Length: 113
Length: 113
Image 1 (cartoon, each protein chain N blue to C red):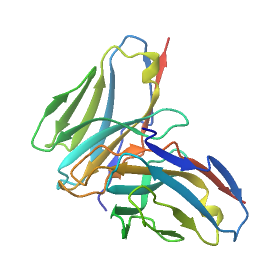
Image 2: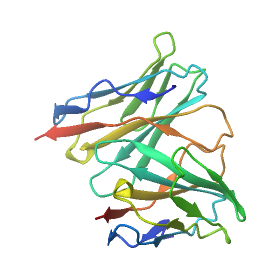
Image 3: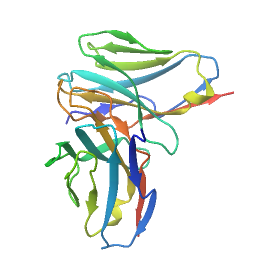
Image 4: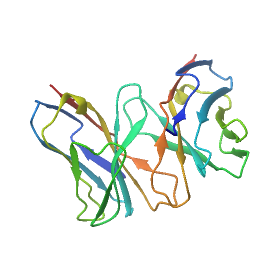
């Protein structure tokens, strides 16, 4: 199993541009999450999904959108990028909400200039 | 508001010694506490968890201690190795089945050869 994969690994955006961060998992996990990690900080939950067709906001959802059309994929959309969105973005998955173990992807480092 | 925090941002330990990483929490309603390890350039990786009705839990070379009286959590790593160098995060979950984790800011552990 590849686990959780994310693309791209790095990206530089100009202010106002848009992009989609891709996340795919091959573990047949129902739950998927998007976090952002600012330098020297912990992870903040942006959005999460408990199954295909179901998404919900986390702690810091403003400026982002998600969709979950399949169990495997959970893309994160940035509209009108701002410098405050410069961060490292991690996608994660878990079998259920009863599992404390979330499996993380390698991250996408995004810089907005 | 409720938060998960850490006492020390950095910790340097001689190879072969034991490491103790501390974490303070303020949400007395948290049901689970979890430790994650994040190596440079990678996503976090689950280490061990402990339920709030336990005081101690042991894994392979790691022990987590929970003191609910003072709302303190610690991760002990025995006989530290160079591969233990990483940032360690504690996280909490407010109830079993709740899919969301709240992460602390992390402690960087450096192993001195």
